[in-house]
Image (cartoon, rainbow, N blue to C red; front, side, top):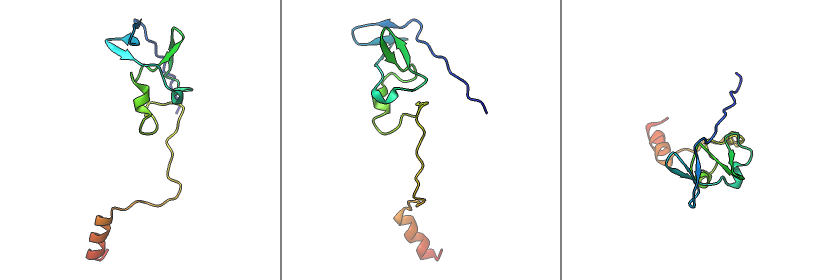
Length: 95
């Protein structure tokens, strides 16, 4: 299956004191982790993400789900975390 290249532009965006205003939303510049993403668009010497207005908050809890340059990591240990309450109930039933 071939990947489709997404071409995104911020036509009609206006530079303001708060940041870049696009369709009534203030866009913040991308963070360091966004470098290399296909979605990043340059506007007047600054780079912005048209998918998410505050890129720093997408990276705060791990990997951004919109990032095209990062793959999600799979647990290599093979161990599955089991809820202890469920495990005790299974043991009581004899499973």
